[in-house]
Amino acid sequence: MPRSGSPDRLIYSTVLLVALVSVAHAAIFVRMAEADALVIAAYRMLIAALVLLPIALITSWDELRRLTRREWWLIAAGSVFLALHFATWIEGVTRTSIANSVVLVTLTPVWLALWSLVALRRSPGLGLWTAVLLAVGGSAIMAWGSMKLGPETLLGDGLALAGGLFFAAFFLVAENLRRSVGIMAFVVLVYAGAAILLWVPVLSLGLPIVGFTSETYFALVAIAIISQVIGHSGFNWAVCAISPMVLALVFLAEPILSAALGWVYFREGFGVETIVGGVLILGAIYLGVRAEGRQS
Image (cartoon, rainbow, N blue to C red; front, side, top):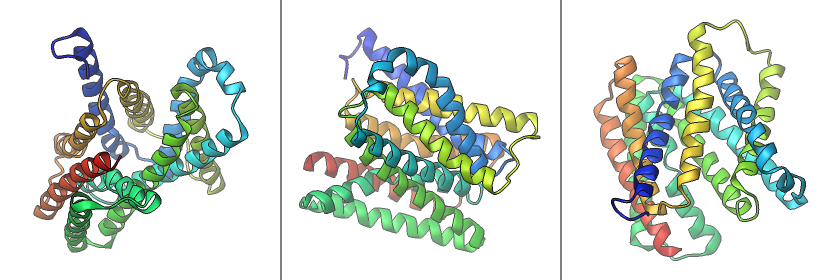
């Protein structure tokens, strides 16, 4: 990370803070939008792709023309996983609490650590096993709390958990593809691919895509511009100078901030099960990232 007190450190810290607040607002915008979860996800990807497309054409046109068949296949795979991630997570937000949905979807680092164990035959170590046990225990506690509220909330928890798994798969594809493809070309093509995959079922099912309230239109644009373009792009820009461990610690703040925003905007509280389970899962993510980093 840039040295303490340097202008670069201030710039990167500011970008990370803005990105964190932007991404944390995603669940808030989902709650504001009175539209089907698939429609929200489709608009999010479409608007983000359209915003970034002119920039990609100007800065990465030669790179886009030189993509190999293997890279196109990886882009297609990444698009599938990203579409599934947003479709399941956004649907989950509409069925469970903001706190539960954001905490469960951020289990991605633990799934990545487990994948490293299975795919690369690495010795798990005490840290990874502890992370897995904490994650399972935290998820079970949160699910128990949701069961008391009804099957709808429990389904929302399950969808959020699935969203985290799909994002872990997307991250593995992205990690492989980013070795040869620049960030702008990558995000534009994956966003566009995910948008196409999401709009196909939206149009096939005849889901309403127009006639919304002004608040819903605002939420659809905001989740694309603020949470996707500014938030995710900000993290991608900062990763070149911020250590993975620092970024991981920043990500740990997202569930806490999202839960706090849920209370501010909707006065949505959280029960004891959410607090206890959330603390265990955040601890699991931290230990999982550390264990994966040491194995690497």
